[in-house]
Amino acid sequence: MTAVLSTPFNIPAPFTNPAPFTNPDVAELGAHAIPPLAQVVGADECVPLATGETVRYANLDYAASAPALAAVAESVTRSLSQYASVHRGAGHLSQVTTARYEQAREVIRGFVRARADDAVVFTRGTTDAINLAAHATRGDVVVLDIEHHANLLPWCAPDRDGSSRARVVRACATIDDTLAALETELAAAPASLLAVTAASNVTGEVLPIGRLSAIAHRNGARILIDAAQLVAHRRISMAGHGVDYLVFSGHKLYAPFGAGVLIGRPDWLDDAEPYLAGGGASARVALGDRDADAAIDWHAGPARHEAGSPNVLGAVSIAAACEALDSVGFENIGLHEELLRARLDDGLAATEGITQLRIFEDATDRVGIAGFDVDGCPPREVAEFLSRSAGIGVRDGKFCAHPLVNRLGFPAGAVRASFGVGTGSGDIDRLVDALSRLTTRARAR
Ligand code: PLP
Image (cartoon, rainbow, N blue to C red; front, side, top):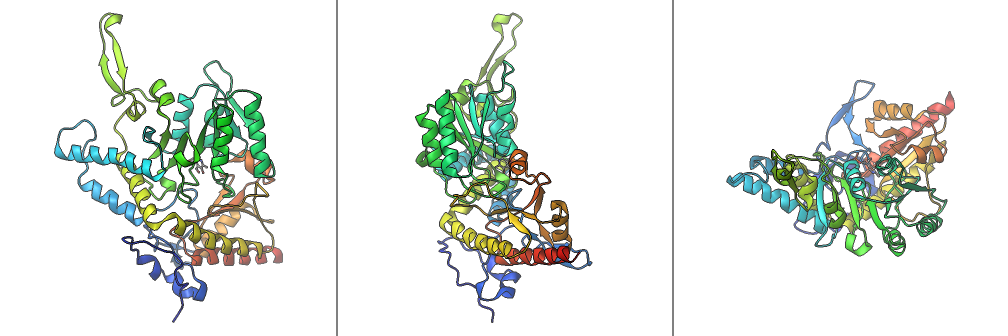
């Protein structure tokens, strides 16, 4: 009988998740198989290969969009049966749906350890959340040049007076030097905000949030953390780390239902004009014949920036993902990811012609992302080969981080494999094996 790695994951009751341990990969892999940590929807989905055979899809593209957790899908399905209009209905199910929507804010607040008075505003995703933050921020904003475009372009857009308020700092070869460069920039001239991505979507390298917050605060700035790539992988404590604003997307948190969040200090948000004008954001609207009679009173709080009918199921799904990940436990998530990442790093290092992308020499933590180049093979060809020959899904290109990927010396882009709680070592081994076949074939050409 095949031995499965006696699970090192201390999965607390009442979380039970038998499905991953029956994953067919586990049986194939022998003594050191690492099973998926949680059940995701579509884990057994099969895809065609160039040969005409089909194979279970190896989804190694979690950083782009993670599959839904089974617990999230169940919660959404349950909510659907009681779904009704939110906020504006007196009917019983409207009340239930409204309560679910508002309850979702509280679950998310608890999950990221936000302060009691932080606003939890639902958005369409991280990009939308950062655009909302940019809309509500006055003054200069300091960013690094290694950011995802979502955390660059909203700040680079011209201010009302036509000038850009983004001050872009070049990341250095080490995290220590990069933090020093940020401190120098913030000390040189006042800035309102430091906006930083906590985990790189190209390399997975994690920046120290607490140290970044301290730098911002001692120089009179607030800090916004783009947690799109971190929130599903590490415990974040807004209060503990001193984070003023946090943004992330549901679809990278196993909740792909079109919602995201901006969480943070309420004052700038309440001072800003509503992000969208419309119903839900307005408390009173009067269109008088005379100018004096005309008045629009806008809500304060999250409703101010959530005009229109909200994405209730998106909000519910994010809250369900938070609860499910809390049940799995971040200690388990971190250990699972470390084991898989070590396996992938070893496999890539042992494959001739593969170079992993790295920003920092001194990064000590990485989430489950590996950006890499295959010598002599254009990234799109690599990704297509992996798909057609092994049923593996990865991402290729510049990952919406053009300045970073160019700077790292890959103007034609790179390939990115990324994983999470639904990944087992079988997927990683399949990738390494396919890359080995590809590079051997490329060398023989
Ligand atoms: N920030 C980072 C670090 C990302 O990786 C991404 C998406 O890949 C985004 C922001 C944008 O997220 P979304 O497309 O969900 O708005």
